[in-house]
Image 1 (cartoon, helix red, strand yellow):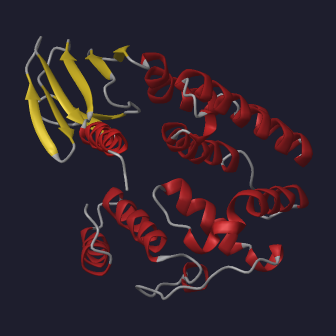
Image 2 (cartoon, rainbow, N blue to C red):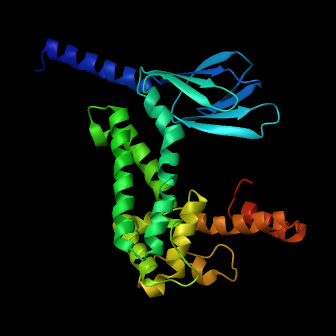
Length: 295
């Protein structure tokens, strides 16, 4: 039989576990700007007046929308554990963090992308010298530097197994891929580009290529390049049903539906820019009716 003491200990452990699971991170948004701020968080909305503040509970991210015209917005990524808390001090031109993991939040929301983009010119120099190995070595080194900094600032006993570290790692790799792939390429693929495409495909994309989806223009452009050059690279890519036929079916058939959507978003934006309302309306209908996209 289970002893009364063991049963009591087990009950206390469960109560503690459920208590921690139910508690959300506390975020205080302080509006030091010269306009009202609207915030979206955890499927809720709130308004914060000038020189006012509001404390909310949520997970994942907070979206800040400046002014009544709502033309300027910013997403703040959050990486807290209960009962940690953070203050987000909003100014007209910047956001300052104070509280738990403030340095981590400052780096992820402000510094990380800049650190990666600063390396683009260095990558391009390697590409122009046809030095694929130097390009690869340098890009991997800079990714490693960023992830080491994230691990240090996150300061979790779980190290790289921490769930917040893994979230930031995915974000960092997405941004890193953008800087890497925009640093090489020409109208006619050469041996250096071929070596680079094959290296990054084999190491980072091949294993999960069947699960690949497009969450950004960068994702779309990367997969499109592999589809465009698949014969030259001797790649086996999964095939997908064409949602809407175009002159690029030969390329789009290797893109999942979400990636095909980005093709039409690009076309839609192009015709809007050209003020061709007929073609823009055609693409709008395809996006909303075939892809159920929000514009």
